[in-house]
Image (cartoon, rainbow, N blue to C red; front, side, top):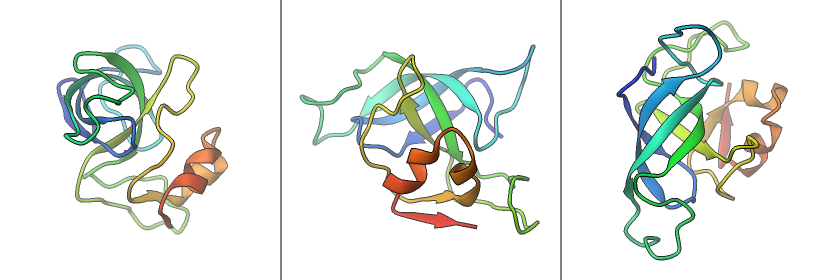
Length: 128
């Protein structure tokens, strides 16, 4: 469950390391976001190696796709709940295209059946 004020790890190579959720999109006064939902975030810190060449700057505002949450996700095909160790996002531009070119870590399998199909190809692995 991601809500306003939640700090999230950025798991792509856009240069951002941590981001803070500003708003949960899709729905009137929606409170929580789950994997597959889009949120608006502000970049809080950058990765040390990529500070000079990063596509994201500190304080910049992006749309982001939630890819992992600590709470159980109900979108698993096998009927089992899927839980990760961290809350993670991938940064998107205004046209909902990926800012980074790689994704670190694994993703849930249901991203293969959404409009974000490209995520499953550039991620390291897929979890059911």
